[in-house]
Image 1 (cartoon, rainbow, N blue to C red):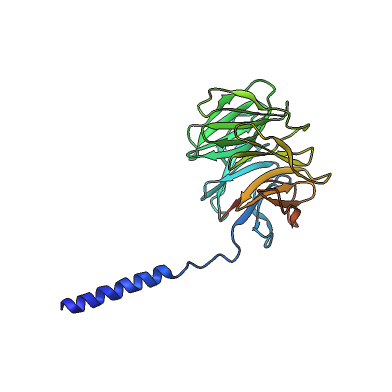
Image 2 (cartoon, rainbow, N blue to C red):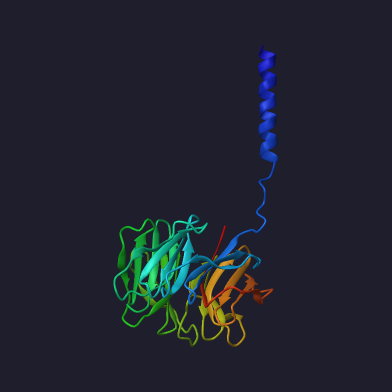
Length: 289
């Protein structure tokens, strides 16, 4: 009897080891690129290589002007610049809530970031940064009040700091997440521009999109090593979104309807890695499963 039980146990262990050694089936299409059609009022989706483009993956209310998007791995969240709200939808396109968080009249939510259990957004018309719990509660539209005329647009968080790009004076400011130690000119002279649509962190660097100068700049998190043209593009390429996947930095060009990419070391630049055939004024971009 004991020998019989030992044989069964050994067989079960062998089966467990065998099953554990079989690799999970790989996705045929890899991660998705989700993007916002600012003029088309929709969310698009495509494979990471640009195939299977669907510019109307999720249809939104006309005139909402979706601007920036993030994900927590379950939902996509985005700002409605004209609609004065933050929406969300499941990654498969279901459970659409266009006004998941409704903001006060006159609000113009721009760049959106996620950190832990909170969403943060910039409001360039009101010189404020808002915050709300990811479940939609505890909405604080004036979580951080900035100096009048700051016009914050690009927004990102790294470590204990929140950073914003100012459209009025070509600077990056930063403050502690508790609102203290504000430094409105942490990095200065980003380059002549009217709009810095996006600001992200990758490793030890801040990257910003210079819409008017057709460049992507970067600077170390300590404010040193500034490179205003880490990536230089052709005339007429308006950069509105940045994202990272693997060893590549991706960007979206609103005027040429393309997505470019470059290795994080600055090599292998491809300004038109993806030609967007089903886009209408593409804006925010997220790369996610």
